Amino acid sequence: MDLNLHSEMRLKRSTPAANTKSRPKKGPATLSSKETEDERGQKRTISPEERKRQQRVLDVFRHAFSEVLSSPSFTDTLQSVKQALYDRDFARAFGNPEYLEVYAARWSPTRALCYASVLERIRDHLQSLSCPAPNNTVQNQEVHQDGDGEGEPLAHDLLTPRQLNIFSIGGGAAELVALGAFLSHQPSSSSSSSSPPLSGAITLLDSGPWEAVVTKLTEALTTPPPISKYASEAARLANAAMVPPSRFAASVLRQDVLALDRSSLPAVLGAAPLLVTLLFTLNELFTAGGLRRTTTLLLNLTAAVPVGSLLLVVDSPGSYSEAAVGKEAKRYPMHWLLDRVLLATRDEPVGGRRWAKLESHESLWFRLAGEQGGGLDYPIALENMRYQMHLYRAEDANQDEDEEEEEEEERDGDKNDD
Image (cartoon, rainbow, N blue to C red; front, side, top):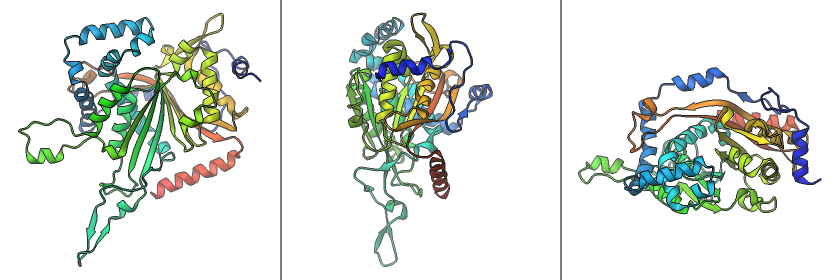
């Protein structure tokens, strides 16, 4: 059957969702958010430690784009970017390297903080994705000296380093820094944790020229921040990079994601389970690329993604994420369209794979320290964020659901043992 026709039939078999409450076919049990969780997000108190972490992320952007932020033309360029976004002329907004730097300096800091908090939220799920790091060695091993002067590596140095791989569709500055912030909170080879050290590698797939932005932010993430020449010796010793270069890798794949076909995806996704992200991207794909092409992408991704991989979707909540479909331009919520495509694979697998929904939250808040970021130091006023979040796992369609539940229980048992 023609794949495009197949995707349309999937939608037609389901009930219209413009403003009606419809339930997609259920896979395994999911976690759903309630309005009270949305309200709790607005009222949550931010600790001094979390404020320091937020400030450190903002410092990465401030140091990476110090010349951009202080440029006399910054305000005018920012207005040009805003106009392009308002006109939905994304080729103009994201096709100019100068525009991308201004965009990254203005809007990516809050997004990066939000995305890092989402990664922390799904941390338990991410543990199943980490695979042995390519070099399979721990650098800078600490040595314990016994009484006769003989040295042995400390126990945590004998653990195999692990790596989290991320394939970010439509990704850019925010996704890159979010990974760095997430890794900075995880065990390293120099920590006393019994958990194996974790590194990260991210591939950013987008049609925009992000290379210069990625280079600047990677340098800001992996080198110590500038420090005053009058700083004390203790301050100099404590001044470290957010994440060591040995634990962080980034690459840019400049391509239109909707032009990727099923045969080309395995080469870019790899063979090991990974995290695939669509962060404030999917609704634009539905809107700009259309239902047919976006559905084809999701089905191609289903067929190519390694079993055990996770798909994380974050976007604007409510009516901000609706796509017009068909000649009558009926508006459908993005998450409803997403479920109709992905959860239909439980009955009709694609490429031997199906998706299970793990978490779904229609409305969540990310809050900055202080009132609208007032407790933080950044040259531009920043805003809190409201978003929706959905998480799925790719399963082997040939495997019994009972076997999958047993494996999941074993994984949970291993986590508890750790």
